[in-house]
Image (cartoon, rainbow, N blue to C red; front, top):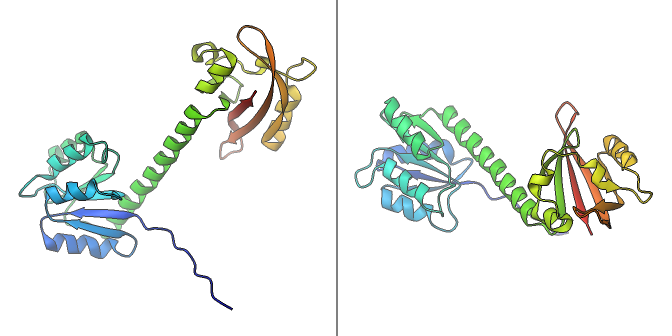
Length: 248
């Protein structure tokens, strides 16, 4: 019987930038067990690697370097669409508050002073990468919401409309201004012409509902649609948002 190989997920990639080899070795000793590492000893090489394919998931960037300062490298990273979203932690032997503030103003995600403490470094890198992953998921969800062919609404717990997508506007004729803050319940009717109170009751109990309904356009005409409802709850179990999608 042949053994099956287990696939291992790709590890995050870090770019370490410092003109002193000893500093790079010190950072690598802390990080190599958990991350794939790339190295650059000057600013131009750092920019080349940052704009490569694949790009690093995070950059640890020395502030003081002979050719191009870390601040200038950071400015160029943030000015280029290829690297504008790569997290950067500035690392400096100078602990001046002005340097830290300047770096954060340029778009650095964090600032560390040398000598770097291992546990602090690992915690900061891990937290920034987790935040980046969360932001990426939000961007993907936003893209799907905006470009979906299905009409979608996001409702608050009181059934007032929080957001609608372009497909909803196209399907119903209601603009975002018409809908935001309004109660969505009267728009959807069951086949008898009654409001969908049974559907909302089922949603509270089961967190999801799907069925055919009559929906109303802005001009007053009714049209049949397949409605899907689901809800997002807080950690305490309270409904925070409802999600609704319509297919004509």
